[in-house]
Length: 66
Image (tube, rainbow, N blue to C red; front, side, top):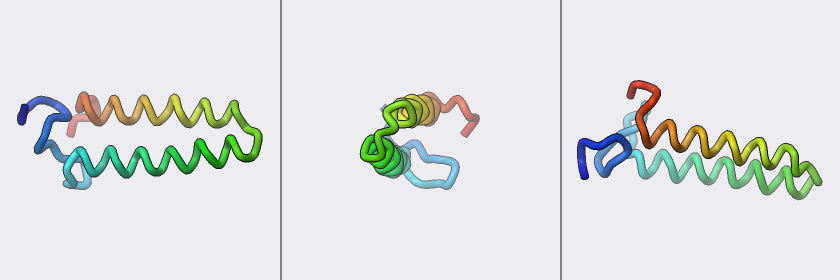
């Protein structure tokens, strides 16, 4: 429902729709996690995964005051 944090029609800080922001965020962190795993850095992959979840949740719940 529009008007709810992270709902359709919401925008990111950069003014792009939240869906596009989340897609870009996912792509960035997927690359980081995959690279870390390829290099045998599961610890780093887990840290990236946790950070991605935090950033995505922050964007969805509008915690950063957008």
